[in-house]
Image (cartoon, rainbow, N blue to C red; front, top):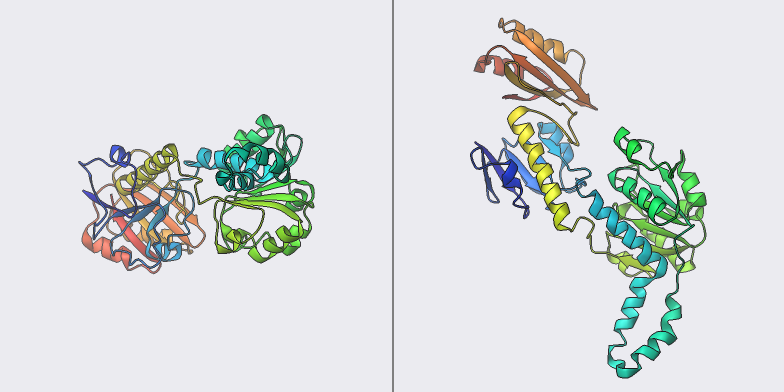
Length: 388
């Protein structure tokens, strides 16, 4: 039986995939084989010795110590696309909120609550300060054409009548097929910055994207551009943004990741990280995370891992052994030699790598004894061995 620890409240749908016959699920499990997490910060957490996998019910994994997990051979999964529709809907909402200054108008109207019967007259008198442009016919630049970006681009192009430009040098085949032909795929961010009236960001946070929207980039944009950030706060240089909002270079900034600096800026719409806060999204993410854990723990299959290579496995042709090791020359031959020396036949073998890490899956004709496992673990570069 596998033991699963939950670090946040997770939808009960996980029990459909992690059944009581094979899984013990608890939020206080001291020695888990797997962890299910949403937003809990794991960076200060002491990871259990025998932990095999972590599944994040969501796309971002900034709350998980990826480097430590990789070093220890712990698989980390996320759920790309499971909350895409929920986030995309909020982006479209944010597009309208920022363009028409709806949020500012609502806040102003609420302050009229004590004006009694004069409210209608005051509304008519003051509403002009909240006028904003329609989006139809304007140009939207979508930076990042993953699951969310594609939905936003298609909706804006087909439903809102916008001219849509999309940029993503790493666009997947699935995204390419899903993207509407009316969306113009550009090969340079400069084209987005130069032509877009509205720019929406859908990128992971990493060393290449941190503060990518900086003073120089903002200077290359249209005067009065509207920026939407539903990725991570750190993608935008806050000081540069504050200056651009103050002088009118940026007309509005809409984000699902507010911080103390954003809340002090004018012409901002600060949404309290509601992108995936729908019951449908929470169920979709929980179900996908549970299935990823199940497939990995029971079969060794790796799908949607952020630190291990993808390995899709069919029916086992014998005893399945999974070896996580460094991606170095000679590793596979050393593993095969150790097994061959024991007169054990390898029926099937898959080897995949991802940067500095590799996974070799062997299907052999009999269960390896403890001595062989010890010999394999002693090979330089081997991180973890599992017999399934």
